[in-house]
Length: 239
Image (cartoon, rainbow, N blue to C red; front, side, top):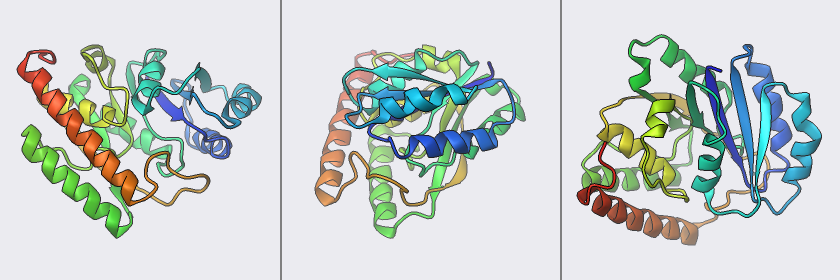
């Protein structure tokens, strides 16, 4: 298996059929697998997965009984992967599954591909979200002393050996920050490529529901950044 992609699904029953169809339309090789994680959903996501998953030879599903965070669902999915290269993207149809093929193409056309970290760079976003992301990126870049822009862009793809080096990754939305920062810290060649970021087709974000949710996200991210820096100073994340 060349590439394993984890797709965490939290209350995405309406988007699951769409993302499976989109993956089927763009995956034209048999060495890619897609692992859809039912991340403790409270809607009909599990029933939809049970009904559809056997129709798609490239896909399989795993189940998290109780939601323990966005990062936890991804980490659980990564633990089930078989690919030489692994990573994740979102199930909300705001990230095109075809972008994963672009990431894999970058890997397959570069030397020293085990040292690559491939990540999207979002385009076509609402102006307010752009300003929000820019402000958070500036803070993280200054505070962590690494170039950390558009931290939550998807997809994320890297060699399995990088994942095996992780120590105490977070279980919430800070996983994107953790992975990008550790990639920079470990000297991986981080390659960004443009991805289109349209509006959601169905449902709403589990966290981005307005100004209050953004403020909560900011506080949580700042708290984790401080915690991560303290752990680095104590040698917890040394490679």
